[in-house]
Each structure stands twice: as structure tokens, then as C-alpha cells.
Amino acid sequence: MSFESRTPGLKSTWWTPRLAWLLLAAAIVRFLLYAIAVACSGTHIVIGGDTVSYLVPGRNLLLHGQFVADGVPDLIRTPGYPLFLAITSLAGMQVAAVVNILLSIFCVLLVWRLAYRIFIDNRIALGAAWIAAFEPVLIENSFLLQSETLFAALFLLSMERLVRFFGNHKLTVLIQAGLWLAAAIYVRPVAYYLPCALAAGLLVVFARTPSLRLKAPAVLLLAVIPCLAIWHVRNYLVAEYKGFASISDVNLYFSNAGIIIARQEHRKFWVLVSQMGWSTFTDHTGQLYLYPKYVDSHPEQVTWNQTQRLAFMHAEAIRILRAHMGFYLRICLENLIQITFKPGSSEIDQYLSLHKQISRQDKLDLGPVKWMGVLVHEYPWAVAEMLAFEIVILGIYLFAIRGAFRMGTRNPILWLLLGVSLYFLFVAAIVGGASSDARYRLPSMPCVCILAAAGVQRLRSLPASKEHC
Image (cartoon, rainbow, N blue to C red; front, side, top):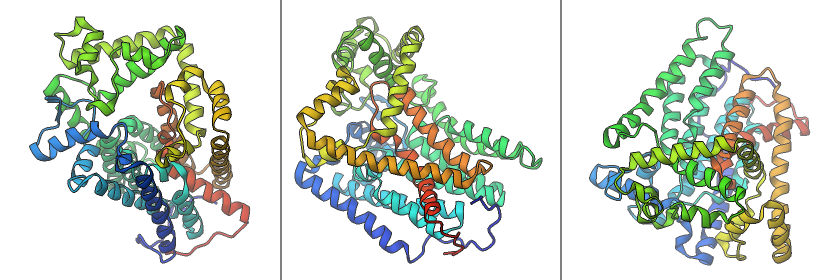
């Protein structure tokens, strides 16, 4: 089915009665998992590894008007999710978790909306939403107080506007897409380079449309770049830091350079990065380069400010990566495979306290093959569970491939869906280093669910529905 650029029959609505049971099912599975997780593991289960690093600067911004942590301007985070978490957690962390679940259910609605925009077929749209309602990664992150769910919602709003622009060519709609995308970047900077990629795509799509060939990419960039420039200016004024968020420098030094050194020298990863000055985010606000453990590992930096320390971490990490580029690319490939295909069952097991996980250090030190052997020996039923989850994710991917062929290679919306999905996977693989959690593919999964629904429709050989809900 090709994308219809003009859809005169499409009503501007966000509801159809057939969504009621779908959203109810999405709510039941999310709230049920949340309730069981709290019963099995306690109320602290909603606190993720990064939650504190969001909450502290967010509370300071909300209550005192300053985005600070540890007595200095916070550079590690951007204010999007910290402010959201600070507001929603005023009545307690469990209230914030419930709000996060409601936001996850809203994402299911947004998947339906986006799919309907693309196909003008309510069966495909509902199918995409049903898949998203039960997709493991979307479910298991629904109540966790981290930024993925809010980012997904804002990004889907941007995608819906962008697809709408392909249909009506109104620049005001493209501006809306850019503003939603800028908001998403303030929540998770992982999409920082996406506006440039989308602008390049618009340039190609409208190459034969003189009125939009240059105007469309320019309008998108002009909608996003000034918004991001505000935070760049803020960082420079408060700390002379030129970057957007220092989390990139922290990850580059400890996670990327750290895993390379550990494997090259056959050392335990967590022991090595601890000697480099690492301490877990659960112990502080994430600006670990300010803490005594880091200074003890780098005594020459005791008089340096945080910007100078970040500059050192960035330069040293780049030096190590360049010296071992082949090894680094191999690690990136391993990360890409794990992020794409990791089933996500172990996270749910952890919520429910179903078994004691093999530590993350063991996985990093043993490598994926030996780690799987240990898992088979110690937790054979958990391996069976992982295989069941893996079958689900592989099934979604296979149907998504069918859906991609169904749309046709000349369809710009196909390349939009594939492009943004691959963007998030590759960026996560490149910057992930020692971290390759399944949650990093969450931004890609709504687009995959939409393509999978188109693939299911193809298998059923059903004619395209023109039900305009």
C-alpha cells in the first residue's frame, strides 16, 4: 500500500470506539505488572538507576528556579524529564509512577494515530496499537521513573506532525513537528543529531518540488536549532561548557573507553572503571566527576573546575577510541545486536523477584556466549522464558519486514520509519559502550510496531480499509 499524500476524508480526531478495549487492555497489563512488582519487590522498584540524577536538579528547578545539583549548575542532564518528574512526584513517587503508566498508555494511542496517518486504514492502525500495547520493552518501562516513556510520547507527537506534513505540505505543521522534536531532545539528548538527518531526508524527498526543496529542511531546522541553542548558551554562561549535556562525555570516558581498556588488558570492567573514578548514579546526581572518588583517581585535577574535568574525559576517551578503532567498532556491533535482540525478560523477572540475576559484571567479564552457558546451567527455566520473549520480538521484526515491502521502496514514509528506527539503534550502539539494555530500543519500537501491523495485514490479504474514524 502506498502512502496517500492527499487524504480529504480524514477527520481530525483522536478517538474511535474500537480504541476503548485496546486502551483498557494496555492499562490492565501495565497496572497489573506495576501492582505485582510493588507487592514482590517493594515500592522502591519504580526507582531506576538514573532517577536520582533527574529528580534532584528537577526539584531545584521547580522549587528554587535553578537547575543545580551538588551545589553547582547541573550539566549532566537537560531539564525536560527532571522538571516532569519533579512535578509528578510532588505527591509521592508512586503517583509519579502512575502518571508514567498513563503516559505509556497515551503512547499506545499515539501509535494508533500515527499508523492511521500513514495508511488511512483503521485495521492497520488498531493492529499497530495492539502490538504496542503488549510489546515487552514498552510495558516494562511503563512505571519506571526514567525518561524513556516521556521521550517516546513527545517523539511520536513529532512524528505524527511530520507525517501530516507529507500529506498537506503546510509549513506550520512542520514547525509543530520541529517543536515537539526539540522538546523530546530536552528529555533525552539521544535525538540531538536527528533534526539534521531529517532535514537531509526532506531535501531528498522534495528534490523535485522547487517550492519545498530548500524551504522544508530550513523550516525544520529553524524550528529546532534555536530551542537547543538556548541550553547551549545556558551551559556556557553558567560553566563555560560548550556541550548540550555532559552525560555524553561521562559515557564516552567510563563506558566506551572503559570497556575497551578492560577487554584489552583482560581486567574486570567494574573494577577498572571504579579505579577510573566511577561511582553508580544511584549514589548521587550523576556528576561523578565532582566527587572525592573521581578526584582520588585524578589528584592532578583537584583544582580543576567541572568543565576542565569534562574536557579531559572527552579528550582521553577520544584518544583511546582512536587507538583501538577496530576493537571499538566490534564492541559497537555487539551492542547493536544485543540492543536489537535482547528479549527483555530479565528486567521483568527482576521487578517480580522471580530469580536472582547473574550480575551485570559477570556478563561483561564472561562475554555473551559464556554468560549464556552459565545462565543455562543455573537458571534453565529463565532461559526458556527468554526464548519465549525472543520469539515474540523476532515475530514482530519479521512482520515489520513484510510491512516494509508492502509499503514499497519508493514510499518516503517507509524511509522515515526505517530511518528513525535505525538512528536510535545505531546511536545507542555507538555511545552505549558497556551498556546494552533492551530499553535503548524503546524509541524505535513504535515505528516497528506500525510496520509489523502492515505486515500482518498483508498476510491476512485483507483489502485496505477506508474507515475514517
